[in-house]
Amino acid sequence: MNKKGALESLLFVAGDDGLSMDEITSLLETTPLEAQNLLTEMRASHNDNIHSGLTLIETRKRYQLATKREYAELIKMYAVSPFATHLSQAALETLAIIAYKQPLTRMEIDQIRGVQSAGLVQRLLLRGLIKEIGRSETPGRPIIYGTTDYFMNYFGLTTIDDLPNVDELFQMQDNESFDLFDFPIDENQDSQLAFFKADSVIPEQE
Image (cartoon, rainbow, N blue to C red):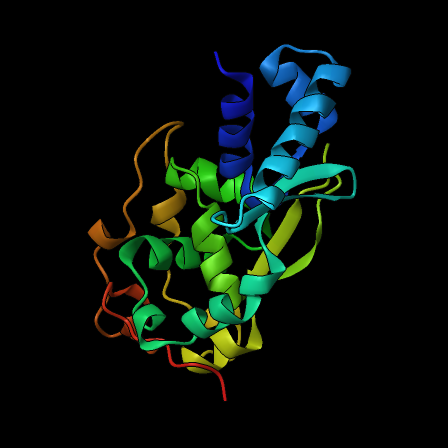
């Protein structure tokens, strides 16, 4: 196994939660020294490569892949552009999970969806629909997410209790697949049904 490639893959999947040194050494079955050397090589490789838009950062003793600062404005432009206006079914599914199950971490979102959601969570953060509301007390202290006032205003909600009652969505067996859009929606619900539609258009904030 190419450990540098394996490490990069793990960091990509970990997303904004990142990985601690203990997690890296355990997953790669290596020593802290070798893991640190791999991290150093990866950081240098990305930083020295002008064709790479990624870099390696360390925050609160956790390592994660991030976009380089010189592309920050471009990423913000994309987030509010017509290209990013339509939320995909996967993004809406992720948003629904956060709305109904908040507060929760990205790993908990992944467990419900059955796939990793790092990119989708970042998209929703950039759109202002969700926000970081704290950190869990579990090992690694992962970020906890919840919805924003913008989310509430857009979907015409006064409180989260105004959301359609879809408790059945989360009465799942372990490893059972989850598809929000297979759930029968009550057309008489007061909340905007655009929340459940894959072609929903989320305008940029004023």
